[in-house]
Every structure is written in C-alpha cells, then in structure tokens.
Image (cartoon, rainbow, N blue to C red; front, top):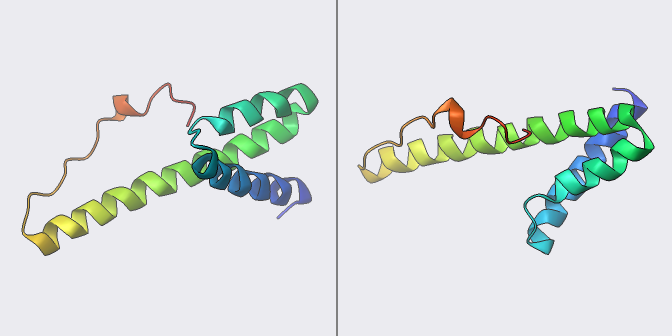
Length: 90
C-alpha cells in the first residue's frame, strides 16, 4: 500500500470515529472540502477510503439485520433500493 493510501485510510478512520464523538454524520464531507483545496490527489484517496468504509458499514448492518430476523423468527428486511444511496457522495 502506498504512503498516500495509508495516510488517507488513517484519516478516514479518524474522521469516521470523530463523527460519532461530534455527532456530525457529514464531517467527512467537510474534511473532504479542506483536502480538496490543499491536494485533489489526497482528497480523492481519502474519499475512496471513506466510500469503502461506509459501504462496508451498510453491508454489515444489513447482514446483522438479516441474522437478527432469522434468529428472532421475524421477517427479513428487504434490500434497500439503489436510489436510497445515489447522490449521497458515497
């Protein structure tokens, strides 16, 4: 992994953790704007790291909901429509 990607991954992890502490679920977008002004290359690597982490989170939440439904004998959740995620910057 390149130094650029390692730095972007670390920042993405830190920002997503800070979102919880600060109660700001769009902090990653604000940080992205700061990065874009300084380095578009770094900003793109950072946003790639953010997108994959958010996608993994959504996938994991869905999997956990499926398993909870199965174990609890309830109806499994539907797959969210693609439109729910478009235009969100993820």
